[in-house]
Length: 321
Length: 315
Image (cartoon, rainbow over all chains, first blue to last red):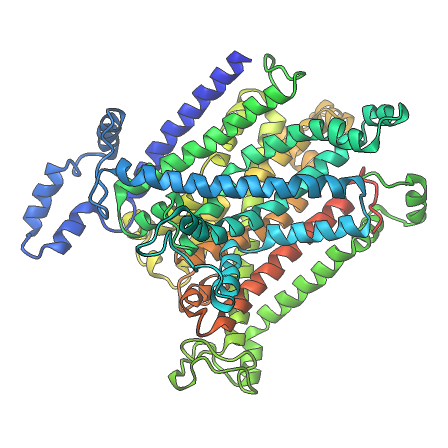
């Protein structure tokens, strides 16, 4: 078990290291470079100055060299400055990370709170009209374009009804907890709606699989109440694959967060990455993407740990096929 | 998937004839999937016929008419006009060509990549399998959307590409197909690898080995047809996903570049106009939604129809 987790951890570090190089290279291929930006913002600079600046910042060196320079500085805690925000990268990034976690956490909890009962409810009466209806709604949730759903919710709740703000973080000048919460409602609602369909389908499939097992029939034959069989026996086993899939699916949730944040001008990681790519803020884009990769890797890692913790039968000693 | 009375269910299919006919009947039994197929067919025909419809209506999809901005629906413009006075219906149809083409082509390319990797990993096993699957895991762990945004933002002039290539008009379409296919093959690869692993042990494959067939021949002639079902299902499901991704990227301004319409980029400006012209925001999104949900239902129906072990659902 420990060996397995250590292996997984090492694997995650390798992925992260490879990714940092790939992203570093890709960002170098984006339009414009820092020197171009300096030159275009200062008409007094000559091409010769440009060459000198390039040498000064080490941009004339080969990419591997530059990457290693960046990496050694980063490992010492120097992540560079944000071009747009004019502060060290971490000072922009960390508050944004907090905002995103609120959004992700809220949507995840809400989606699971809906998916678990609905999925179980549908699974115990398969192929009834009710189950079919749940299935149809789930397909709707999976298939709706998140940005369009956000637009429609905005039209309904902000434009037509005027109940909620259409975007932002807080009322100008205001800033109480209730005020902040108001601005979270639509983003969380969007993210919940786009993820709840998939979760419900996982729960339903896992429950139906469990209900076929002999132990369920045995429990029923012994006269255990239906309620206990379903919620006590079957659901506990069904949770194992559900937890795994939800954790593995964390990347999808993050994609949703990027779209939701951009739509509602919610200042989170997703919007930060988007804005920094648009605004040639290379340092922030680089670190933001690495954080996003890290989040997904942590999700995968938690899936493995959760899998092991929930199912005592699983041993990770031998190779899995 | 347990039907309450398997015996009765199999009786329903008694005398269905060939396996192909049986599959066809199973597919039709999944009524939502069958209906989705019809909807998709109609959308495809409408999109293909877009130039004909334009000629018939006597309109030009690119014609800007600033005296007729935000026109309400009327005889000349069945769905009204957009912020530049262009006909909305025609733009939706032409946008459909782009969105459907991007989704289908990218899904097919991704399926080919995934199949090659999956069959190779499953057939050869050992180190190659381990390496390919770790690689697949690595790709799955990537934050897909931010990475796609970066890939879509790359300056093609900085790449060693043939001259003039980066300037051609359809480059944004090719680029989006390429980047989505390059990152989107993982599901197919995993499914195909799993199927290949079990097929490899079967007697007919061993017989082919005994007869002296080469690796390539075994993979192409014996394994590939046996793993076709999961490939078809996964590809169908991924078309929907890819259309969603394309629309998100185009919406954010990184995908299909205006003035070429796609369902995604038609929504880009809609956000600022939800107060003044909400109808512009509704239609493109509705079409994306209908198309994606239809592909998902179709994939679901194909899954039921093509899996020989699945007991038919009763609907």
